[in-house]
Image (tube, rainbow, N blue to C red; front, side, top):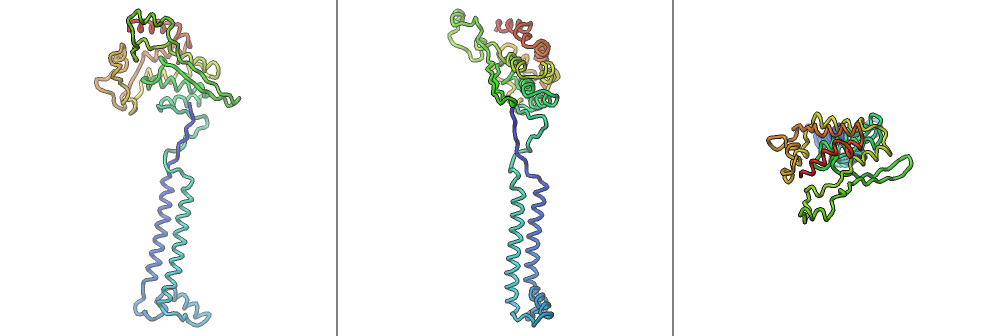
Length: 321
């Protein structure tokens, strides 16, 4: 389980406000320019033909003699001053807009914010399951086990109770870091002499000889006993639910679901190739057999997997491969 921060999208309402401000600035500049260049009919030689000089003339009538400048000079002075004012105003709008968006990230979605914690996995249903465990009072280890169990249901091609487990755990209370290597051992009887006696001279990467004793369930048990707070039946409940009731395949699920090189492996087609055509996003997959296995682990712990009827079933199946 990991904390993930996601960037914010620029808020559309803020963008709209900035656009309106820029348009208003342009409108003011165009309006001022129009008044400067416009002329009053019949007033070519009069100072009042310039709005700037008209204002000065009215002021001069009260405090002194009329404006002595020619019309064109007054217009040029007015245009220069108005242009400077427009540049200052337009720059202020741009600076305000830049300051407004300086603290807003340019891309990505909003940050994930929660009072309980954040769970990050490659599949959203697993993340959701872990977050739900946190909301119900579980700790980080409980959430990690729950998310990992769901991953074994929704992405069985890279996860599952038939695999191994590795963990790095930071305990905030003590500031200590713990590591767990729960990778499985090679079966005791699988020696080089045994393989030679069976005529095995090379190892098939997907053959039965490469299967070790799965360490995932033992790792769950070790993690929960040392750091967890909830019982297995609550932690594994989300995974049991999705295995029993099914879940819709996401895009990447559908794309990688069927492994052609495993089509001839015993039990593969019967379990995972349940559609007449390659699966599409949204197709629902159920695995009631896996739900049954998870229920046994939830009820009896690791012994259900390593020292129970489930163990005998796995050994018999592998012996026939």
